[in-house]
Each structure stands twice: as structure tokens, then as C-alpha cells.
Image (cartoon, rainbow, N blue to C red; front, side):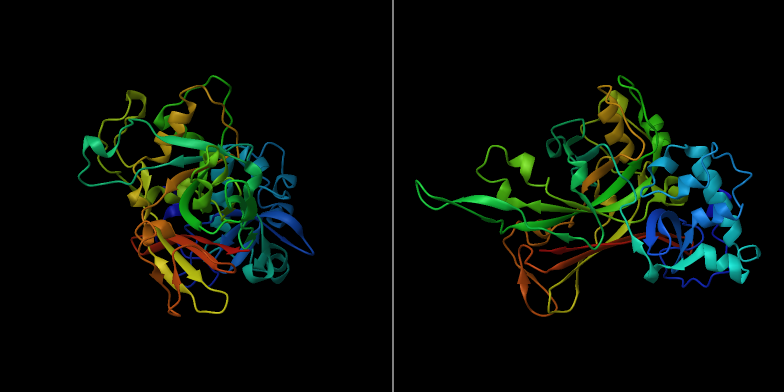
Length: 403
């Protein structure tokens, strides 16, 4: 286990036990304030540690960051930092862990603290990455007793999505439009009525590969930077009775969590996946703990009503591991890029369509109103965490409001 994952570590910052961001986590993201501009930060308790300021104080001087500091920490995305490679990510996380430990006072002088620590309530969190490729995988749901008829393909499936459709948390999501047939001759353009959310686990690429390169499941995991949460948006009425539907039903927007948790931090929370039948193709077969157990929570709040927690799904419901999905993508020689984003597929009970039995049983909220699909000004909130040996490690929140 990496020393930064030691469950006995404590920080000199007061961190509640229910916080998503203990010293064992240290996820990376991009934040900005009016005074500082956009910078790379690490979440710790209720604060953001400004890595550009930390670098200016010289705390990274002995690390091999390829001569890119401090400018690599003054960017509007993590892409430049990710391109430094795994040794650099690990070195920075380990140094940050050292600086924040309860017995290290170097950051605790008033001047250094003022430069390096900012309250999360005082910053704006941006999209952490700017991918060139955004791939949405589909993942059938895991079962303890699968049968060959449950899954007809021994490989994952997925589709490319517009990278420009990714938006930061708290962004209002515009309801797309569609053509409605009024009669044999007349049509009308109007907003879709069957808008839904989809809860997905995101994984961020950490290494570029050349065109024609294929990677095994084990090799793929070595290329990954970390995991995040993605709140997808899905218009059911754009996939009915229209040939180009798959191009439209999910392409209009996805909301990305502001924090990316390194795979190193998630090592203690690895679990084995479900039995896979039929057996995957040979290059996709794996043994051991290739899944990460993330407990999720989805809440819905109407414009004038209280919030209702509508689901508490888990990533244990996913059939394919992230390694299998990405290994399948590279099996044709598809090149990868650092900072690219991939999503796992929707988890069980991770959409209103699931929660309402395919739209047949309306969901009753705390204010007694009902939902089959989202209404204007509904606020959807997604959060998730891993927990083991008294350590709770979270991903923060990602929210979106329907326009």
C-alpha cells in the first residue's frame, strides 16, 4: 500500500469523519478565483490546496516534473499535468500528503497558509480535463447468477460522444428539441418531454498511445490517471421512431464532476467483478480485483420543493471493468490521449427510467409530487464514496439543473 494511503494518517487540518476529502484521498481538480485565475488544486477537507502556490514556495523543487513547474499548475485543465506521467502524479500526491500530515508544520505559517489554502466555498470549480476523445461505454448489469442468454456479446459496446458536450458541475442543462409530427403534412419543433439522467463512473486517460497500439487489460490500467463521476443526460424521445436517434439521444450534454481521484488512492477499495458468461474474448479475460466499489447517491430537488434521495446505487452493478472496456477500445489500434474521458455505462437504478420500472410507476418525491421524467428547474445531485477500515474517500458532488 502506498504510504499516502495509510489509514492511520491524520492532517493538521480539521477534517470531519464524513468528509469526502481526508488526507488519504487528495483528488486533483481545477479551480479559480477572481484573484488567482485558473489553477490546479487538491481537495483536503473543506479546502483546496493551490498547487501553483505550493510550487512557487519551492516545495516541489526536488521532484522530477520535467522542468514544467510552476507553470504546469497554472492551467485551465489537468491535461498538461497528466502528460507528465505516473511518476510525477505519484510524487506530487506523496509530497502533498507529507505537507498536510499532522506532524508537518511547513505549511502552517500564516503567510504560507494564506497563499496555499483556499476554502472550497470561495472558489469556482471547473471541468478538470479537456478531452480530445469522449467515449461512452455501455455496461450490462452484473448478476450473481448470469446465464449465457443474459449477454449475447463477449465484448463491451460503446459510442463516441462530442467532447464539447461536457460541462462543469452546476451548469444548467438545456433541454434539447425534437420534431413532432402533427398530422400527415405538418410538423412542429419543440422541447423533448422525456428527459432523464444517467449515473456513470468516469475514468480519465493518463497516457497517449500511437495509432495501431493494442493494450492488454493490465497494460490499460497502467495508462489511467483516475476516476470521477459523470451525470449523463438522456432524451428518451429522441430515440423513438427516428433512424438517426443514437446520434442525438445523449449527445447534447454530460456533466462532469470537478474532482478526479487517482487510481493509487483507490487501491484499497478494489473488488472482484461478477462472473462473466459467456466468457469474454481471450484478450479481455482477467482475474483478481479490477473493479472499484463506489457507493453512490442520487437526489432530485424540484424548483420549489425539498430534495429527495431517489437512489443509492453502486458501481458493483457494472458488468465490465474499466480495464476491459479500454482494452477493447484499443484492440483495433485506436490511439489514446492523456486527458481523454471514458464512462462506464449506467449503473443499476442510475436513471429515472430504471427507478420508475421503465416509466410505468411514477416516483413519488418528498413533496408528494411525482416524476417519470425530469421537469424544468429540477436539480439532480450525484455524489459517491468508498469506505473501508474507517477511511471514507469521496468524489465530491456533481449537480445539474434542467432548463
